Image (cartoon, rainbow, N blue to C red):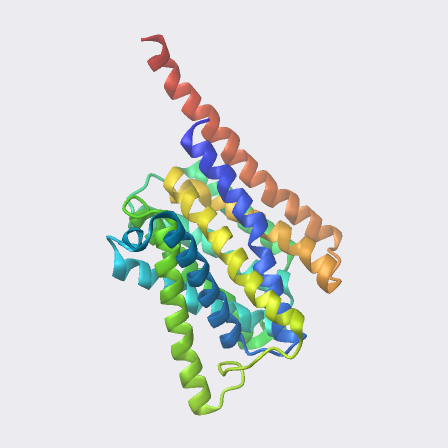
Length: 306
């Protein structure tokens, strides 16, 4: 199987997996009333701890060496800010609504991949991204009047995640995915700890420190770190295999899983218009997948005949 095809498959797997992280964050913030900053810190602390144990088990301290320490810490800080914005958003609004607003991110990623990474972005690929975005608007029509300033938080997450993915593509050739996620975990935990300190100082409820009140919440905090570690390892691997702009439409699969989780966990049943949007989202991803596979196969035919 060709690398770019593997990259698309890995990216799709990650997008179907990561909404579980968002759902747990919403549950902790709404059911157990944990502050979003505490949830964000726990997520990155567990991630860095898990990857540290794995790395030390693989090759000892020597495997912790990185060629891009500051870059990976910045990646983590970006994810820390993005997670904080998103966990705060889902505390006040439905999960699927927040993810629908977040999905301006693939458009940002496609544009940034052309501007920063100098990747070629053809009109067909760009069109697939736009069509997928239209699908997300059909799934959930975000209402600024309904949610107010909270609706802007997923946009902040989108901007952070787009830059994070660009840095993934830039640094993935130098460090292993595990090393990248270890230092990203440290960066995210450090940023979240800073926010906790500021929140405690000024008495901000969402930015302060809190402890779970039920045993299940402790396990869910650990599960969040594990899901985040596995999911973002898949994302890093996908970006080692395929260009950022090619992977952008496949991020829309995340909303498919988010709608499903919203139905099962929070009782949010999709309307017919939402199902139409889901079909459009899936269609845009399948189009890019099939077109890129056939295009690459056509390019390799002359080589095979030589």
